[in-house]
Image (cartoon, rainbow, N blue to C red; front, side, top):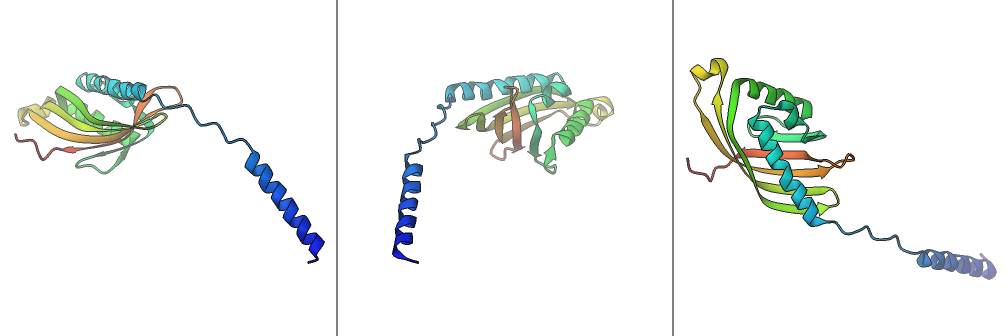
Length: 170
């Protein structure tokens, strides 16, 4: 390569580098309103509990994203249709008399995404044919999950893992 061509390549490369370096940086996204995200996450659980207490399957399912995954002790991980089937069966054979969710940790990950963990308590009594042989039961458990704000502006459960709390004495 002759010397002139080398100089032209160096000059052209320098001009491209200068042009790229002078391009204004993309604007930073607006800061996340962590307080609003935390409030939205906290507001989801009372609605969830009310729907469970009413055995309102549709009400519970509206709180889950269509792409949700649920991992509940004793069952394989489920998508939303599998969860709907399971809850339908449970609502047909038990009545929930108490259901509380107490978040203990909330972390705003970013815009529209919150991780949350805490504990829950659920008291149930068998109904129908199971009422003759079944006993009332109270389950103390822990949960961890991801809540997302979807395109329609509603907050929903994208991932939920729930399991019995081995640290609670009965």
